[in-house]
Image 1: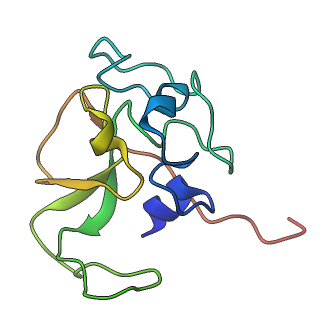
Image 2 (image 1 turned 120 degrees about the vertical axis):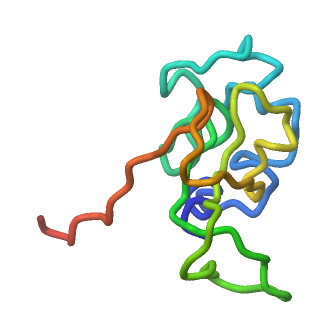
Image 3 (image 1 turned 120 degrees about the horizontal axis):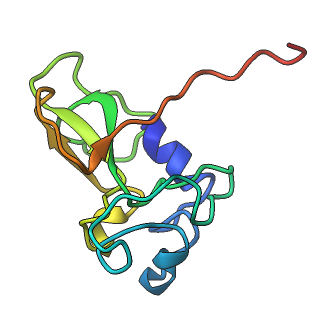
Length: 130
């Protein structure tokens, strides 16, 4: 839930910027513009919260284990506490537009590695006044 929240940056649209697939090239490296290669970070537009490359470039490991979504709407859902397959989000330079949607997810075994699978360092914000 945290990754998707960060990707959406306050939006409820298909992508962080809206619903149009034709504008994805401004925010993401994906199969139509990447030449099947990863690219340095921050060459595309950031989302509303200043986060770059939330769509495309590389799939990003998440700490969640793979599990079925619960029925109905939830706020900040938690995945299973253990499992065998981890969630990845964002799509990659080898994926078409539908894999780059804010809500899309895939999964990998923790031992898997790939040239289009990476991670994003994240930490809680500092308390106000620090």
